[in-house]
Image (cartoon, rainbow, N blue to C red; front, side, top):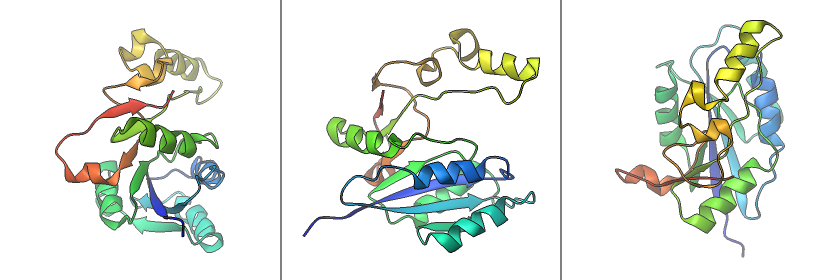
Length: 186
């Protein structure tokens, strides 16, 4: 009989109507490694823009997705709630205003197994939020060493040990220790 592991995906959000649909679609499009089951928690801080209604439609169509209230409203409170409620051997922390490549979960899982790192993640590709000059400027600054310093995940760093990674994929055991190691996927 195959051993089954659970990946708990945590998506904190607050008023993400513009992005949550595409985010959850990308999560549901993940290539899922053999022997892995998903639980997806959308941890809402009291959205009033229609975000909750969009997530509710997902929950009626897919039992893996749950909408959970985050009375603390901020991301750290949402993550604490999600970690406590998660049943996973692995915890993946995603942003609601981001969409992910279909191989992201697979790459994170394989990298975590191959490296033994407690947290792995990939690079972040930032797109302009609009056609305006200001949006183009923000995108340029957040993808250049001048604007983000040594944030390799924003400037296309190669795989290897890092100080931080975005959209982390954590071993659940790491939350029981006081420190852990980080590695980027690519």
